[in-house]
Image (cartoon, rainbow over all chains, first blue to last red; front, side, top):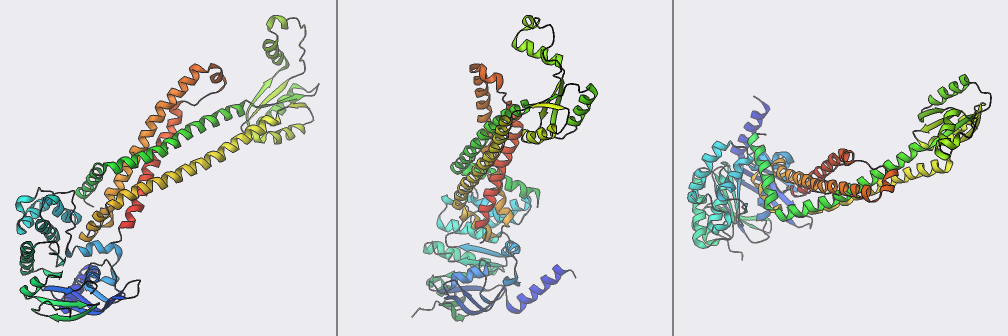
Length: 247
Length: 299
């Protein structure tokens, strides 16, 4: 068995044992000295749909940044898809991030390019052959309901449509995990529900979905696992949970 | 890396230039202004050095011999002088040649016929030309030590002035070139920095999706190099036309000046200036963009 195969096997074992996301007593302290995360331990298993809820300053954004390896934990271990993020070298980060699809509240699309190019961009990065890009991009755009708008500039789209493009871009490379940071934050209720429905379908197809949100109505209605955070610690973690009131 | 990826990054580099046309134009203008000054200074400096060098080559040391020195001994001394490293040229002038030159220059041939004998008889001499006038005094000391040498004609003042001027030009030019380049790099990296900062969001998105540093950096670096190339080509074109125009103007208007000032041809100037400017333009564009993008890559 080659070293590469051995590492892959080790990662698979780690995922089987601890989940696709595993935080072991993780603390993150910024220069100000106050810990943004304080001794977090968390396992998210393959195929789960998880809401992470909490007020501003509860540590949700720091958690997302740790999972994307934008930040390093001050102490404790973070494992994503079996990768030990503390030991991940800078040059290996891009390849690691290709395991994670990510969607933001503000969509973060390349506004000078059309819908097709925004989605194809994610495939170009991993050097997918052009023939496959031409096959994959229309297919994923059809999945998110934008098959007819592939030529449109992103600025011509509604908020809901822009978020669908972001979703298509996040999914086109078949990531193991989809991280959605306030995906409905800029959307009206109708579009919010449509996006959540899409996320549920994506999850049913096998992708682990982690949604950070403030949307009480959606969290309460969907009856999924809910992890509530407050001041950098997990205050509750319930299967089929609901939004916890702050008081 | 796949060819399709390489082509894609090239395409993006070109697209970026047009997409950010105001920033591109500002960058080209900055590089062009700096390299125009550099080129102008280079052309003036090279001509000045050329003129000084010509003047230096015209400075000679003349050695006369004691009466009764045999032709063989004079020839032997000539060989000794010629063997020295600082000598660029050695000319033997017999007394007859010396008189013929003198007479034709100062009296005219008819008047010279009034001298039945050569008044410069016994004035055989060597005209010695040096490759470096600053070594003149060392040569004179050595010549003085030869017993057969009666007199040495030389101008210490000319030699000192010319070697001093040469040294001054070298120091001043080095100083100005360093200042110009430093100012260029500062201005250009600032312009490039502004252009890239505007697009830091785009870089962030690329990094979140999983783009490698190379994939993000390549279009920006290519863009920087193209801007540098254009920024270098524009002043080269202007200097080429301007140089030819000024040269023709001086030659036509100031005939006196052009008879003793020998200017370098535009071809000779550009054989060095063109590749140097293009290299500087591309290099500055490359360095400016690569260092600025690096700041935005830590996402």
